[in-house]
Amino acid sequence: MWVTTALLLGVGCLGLTSFTSGLTNTQDFRGAVESVQGQQLIAKAFPAGSNAPTDVVVRNVAALPAAARAVGAVPGVAGVGAVERGEPGARFSVILKPDPYSTEAENLIPRLRAAAHAASPTALVGGPTAQQKDYDVAAARDNRLIVPIVLLVVFLILVLLLRAVTLPLLLIATVILSFGAALGISAVIFTHVFGYPGETSTLPLLAFIFLVALGVDYNIFLMARTREETLRHGARHGMLRGLAVTGGVITSAGIVLAGTFTMLATLPLKTLTELGFTIAFGVLLDTFVVRSVLVPALVFDVGARVWWPSELARRRHASQPADIMSAREPVPELPERVR
Image 1 (cartoon, rainbow, N blue to C red):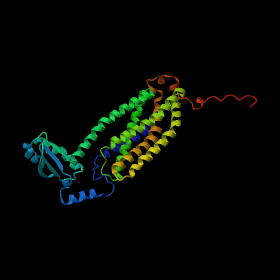
Image 2 (cartoon, one colour):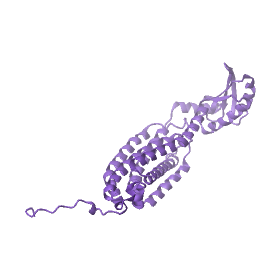
Image 3 (cartoon, rainbow, N blue to C red):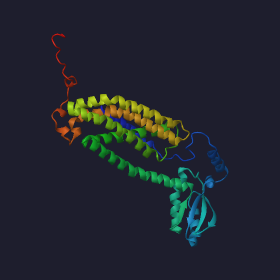
Image 4 (cartoon, helix red, strand yellow):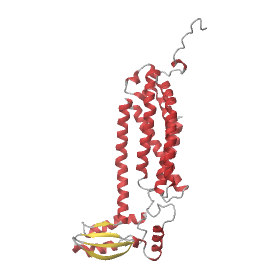
C-alpha cells in the first residue's frame, strides 16, 4: 500500500514541470478591469512600456550621457526620455517595447542594469518593472532559505514529541511528497484546465507553509496517540488503535479546512484562486491519502523500528503484532446466581 501510494504521489510531483511563475499583474484579474483595458489601448498606439516607464538614476552626472546611450542600445528598449537633474545626480526614464508587467519586460531589467553599471557603477534602475523583478528574485531566495529551515524546525519538534528519529524522518518525507504532489497536480490544472498563463512566484512558499503546518498537526494527532497505544499493545496494534481513534478527528478537520480555503477561489484574483485551490487540494490529499494510508502502511511495514532509538523500539512486545481480540480486557466470569 505504501509503495503504491508513494508512486502515485510521485507521479503527481511530475506536474511541477508545468509550474511557471509567469502570472503578471495585468493577468491576475479573472474578469475585465479598466486598468488592464487602458494598458491594452496604450499598447496599440504607443510602446507598451509608455504606461509604466523604467527609471534610471545616475549619481555621477559626468557619466549621464554614456549611461543613456548604453541603456538605449539594449534590445527591447523603445526610447529614452528626457533627463531630470536633481540633488544628487540625475534621472531619465526608459520606455520598454513589451508590456512593463510582462515576464519579457522583467527579463530586460538585468540587461538594463548591466548596461547602466558599465557606464556608471553607482547607477540605479527602478520603476514598476524593476520592482516586480526584484520581488520575484526575493521570492525565489526565500523559497531556498525558508523551506529548509521550516523542515528542520518541524523535524526537531517531532523528535522531541515522539522521542524517536526514524519516525520523524519518515513523516517529514511524507509531508514533502504530499506537498510536491499537491503543487504539481494544481499546476497542471491551472495550466491545462483553467488556462492560466502561469502561477504567482509566492505560491510555492505560501502553500508550503500552510500544508506543512497542517500536515504536521495531523502527524502529531495521529502519532502521539499511536505512541501511547504502542506502549500498551505493540507497534502494529498501537498503529491500528491510533488510526481508529484519531481518524474521525483528522478527517473532519481536513474537510472543514479544505472548505474554508476553497472560498479563496471565489475571489476575483487568480493569485488567491491558485492559493485557495492548492491548499484545499493539498489538505484533502494529506487527510485521505497520506495520513490514512501512507503513514500507517509505513509503520506496519517498518514495525517497532520506527521508534528508534527510544526504548520502545527495543521492547519485545513492540515488535510483535498483537491480535485485536487479545488486547481487550478479559470478561470476568459471572456469579453463579446471575447465571
